Image (cartoon, rainbow, N blue to C red):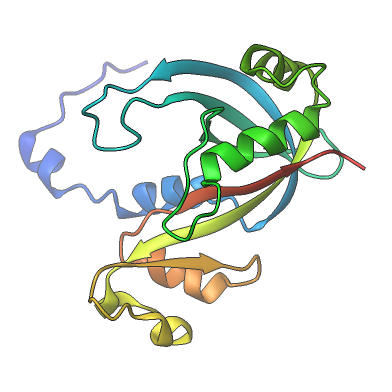
Length: 190
């Protein structure tokens, strides 16, 4: 058995790690689809009144774990916020965090509509989630299939991929964009 040798600084600075980083990003991809979902845990908080996002609002951050239809093969996980305090979008609709809280109540069959009952039920009962694989992309980097989605104000665009959009996925990952999993809906397992 030989002893280990020290690695020189020149080797540290010349090593390439692109493949490692690309593989790590690809492991994060949860393709657009519908998955059996379990809540592995949650944290509760009330944002400060002067917070930039959701000031003064009570929320719960759910640690969601997604599974294939067999209920055993894990696809991945993400975090998603829900809120039992109603807030509305600019067009007067209930906002996504409040809508997802109501959907969580329905999906889990919680015995009561209060936050404690709904959150505790979510730890015990699997349900379905509709998720979307998204990328926030600079207008200059949009794939040709999304070229028509450039925002008029020139800001970055949210791009939603379909499960078979492998070419577009490779395009965005190769440019250094990381996938973001957006949870769209919760509903009961049928």
